[in-house]
Length: 425
Image 1 (cartoon, rainbow, N blue to C red):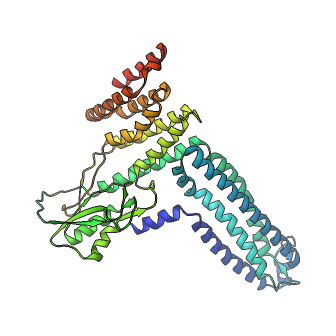
Image 2: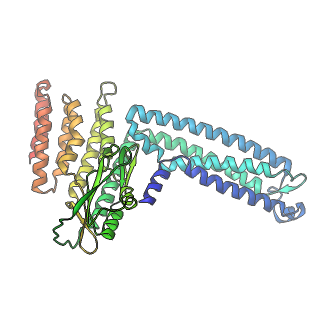
Image 3: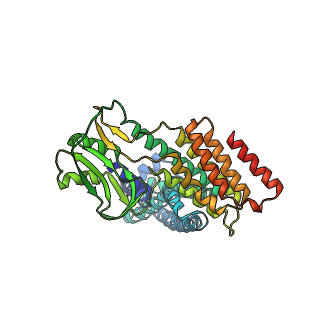
């Protein structure tokens, strides 16, 4: 869990990779300057081609020019990022800012610019005693860093242009959510074998939150390990993505006696609270971002139903994977078969409602979006169990009841009824 928390902070920060690259640039600058100073001018001229042996005055000119140029590239880069962040927030959803900030390509490119600037600046500082001396390694690496920064800048322009395309954003959110589904279900499936029937009559004790925030991460494995060590059974009262207040009950545990405060804190920190939701384990949050993009697309100001339908199709893909997962047990067991954790599971009906109830409301007069919902529901029912098909069909009737069919022409009615019949088959 601690590794996950640290990885999450690193992933969402702009400072980590530039810091690492800058430290490497400092080390390389010291090494290259010392290597240049360890050779005499005659040794350099005899060991390297004349074109690579640079006089100190020319080297200073090259490095100072590169320092200024790379700083300019870095400034333009940050300006481009601010434009993209504004676009993401205003056109798509404020929640999609996380997807761009945590993008590794952008972070690596920024780190390259910063490290190139640091290398050339520090090399200039260390070359104070290089008068009348030939230099090879430092200027050459400086030139190579400048070429790398130029190539990175061109690629960044391409990457930014691709990032602001709504289809690319929708695709990235869908992949993250599908990954989160696999991560959550695989972790819980590890702790459901060899169960034993137990009649637990022990006293129950409560553990409450000490601060307000969203449930960002939940360490299932650590909770089960703690419960096994204390011979306790833990019951969770929260879901990933819930907002809790100070003193909200997070979990209760049944044990022979009440645990110490420090021991209860170990249970408490397995539930990570934060100021905003994340997509690492929060399946519903990924769906929410797609819903917000769809709602903005069908708003009168934008009027882009095709983007909304794209979002609906991706939501259908996510729900299809959810219903294809093995049914999750609320009871999780340790490796000896003892019940250690009871979790709250959300069913398909919950995800269906959270996915489409807002779109249903705001698209009640848009036949293309409503038919898109019916087609997504049809995608979910393919090869599904009878109970799942019944749940989806019941929700489809809810969608149809919310549509204002009085605004439809005859051909619109036929188109809508055809989609409805296809779903019921």
